[in-house]
Image (cartoon, rainbow, N blue to C red):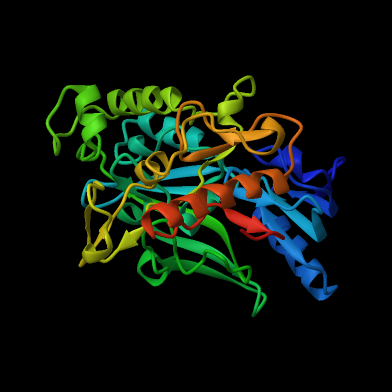
Length: 343
């Protein structure tokens, strides 16, 4: 555990926005993560646990207490009696590197989640999902640091985490910190069933078929690059927190006429991108001073074009949210975690 020379949180987020932290500590072991959080709690300091910063909007005023940057590393595979493989990953591991390593080892299941920025510990918090696969389908359990009791809880089952569409009981809480994650993956080298129509078309297969995991990973990465959703320091379309709004779930009777939808239990899910586009917001729609804008490739991403602020980004987000509400009567909810600020 060591102090970090810069306290500007903008340098730790994919949006490249956010003010200073009063104190920032990099923790490279699980014990160091626990020690840093426990010490700050004892001192009565506010604590922000930071991973890859890919799903955060941090206020321009920064953070008034201690930021613990989780930089733990390590992966292990164990063959299970049923032929599947248990993959154990430390929370600080880069997520796409985990997916790449799993695919290289002949493990399927994670390939549709390729190219997603951030650290592994955040994946169950958000129930990360893309191209027809969600973490909830693969997660076995997690190890947590419980700040209320000051103890580490091992092997907390996925079933206890309230995993749902882009959320869990861990999201929006600061009293439970993910330290380690375990996934059950098929050991046959094949992908998860290809459910997402765009991905199936790209691969030239029918929905529901399985393909080599490596082929699915490359197709997903190509699709994400085309939408500016793979990090590239030279491409401002990737200076984002990914999809800024979740797809809203509404009663079927409340779905706008003509809007595409798909079942979500006894309700329906609407594509936020369609709602945004049909409310008059085009790709590249600029916010204050052109410092922020909708991506030029994907209207669901709010991007930082340089020289902007979190306040600029939130002003653009409000414009989009209010425009969709006025046009369709549907409320959009933000997907990233808002730190010290609100929409």
